[in-house]
Length: 226
Picture 1 (cartoon, helix red, strand yellow):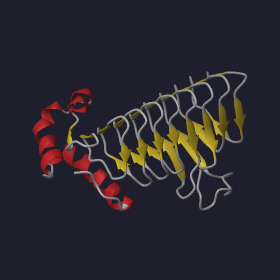
Picture 2 (cartoon, rainbow, N blue to C red; picture 1 turned 60 degrees about the vertical axis):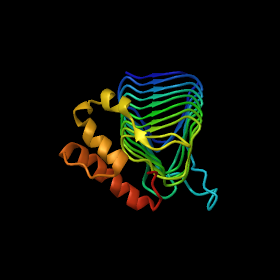
Picture 3 (cartoon, rainbow, N blue to C red; picture 1 turned 135 degrees about the vertical axis):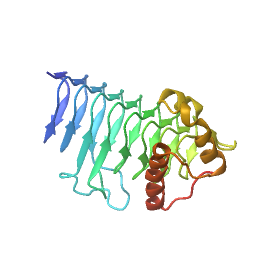
């Protein structure tokens, strides 16, 4: 059973799984699907058209958003419809804090943390387990690699490698916190060689993560922090 505050506005084709909580004054515009156990905070807006200067009044009536399960989306966050791809998508177990801007055509994978006042530009891809710090701005088409950390206040104009820490003005370093949090401590030396020296990983587990990032990196046509 879902708990939907009577002040929420639900418009169009919006489908819910079970045990979702929609708090006061939310606006949810379809086509939109939500999985199970999500908490949608007050004044969250999901489903408005993407902000695209090439076509600011495009027909978004069939543009779809998918939100998985067990996400927390806090107050004043906005999630916009796609302009160019099939979906704007948020995976499972994500934590989007206050006033996060999720743009058109964004892909937010599972277990991502995005902290308050982060602004993502269109067609950004945030991979599993990444953490984006306070008030970051991320350029269009950028890829934030799995289990990486982007430091607060960063202006991200390139792609960020998996398992790395991007801190403006400092060399790229290893996100050791993520290694412990997500159970990669047995791969520590392999990850360090990849992040710090660019050596290709040897284990199937790390190689698969890096290969997924490399495919997204090539597609983005952006440079990479190294």
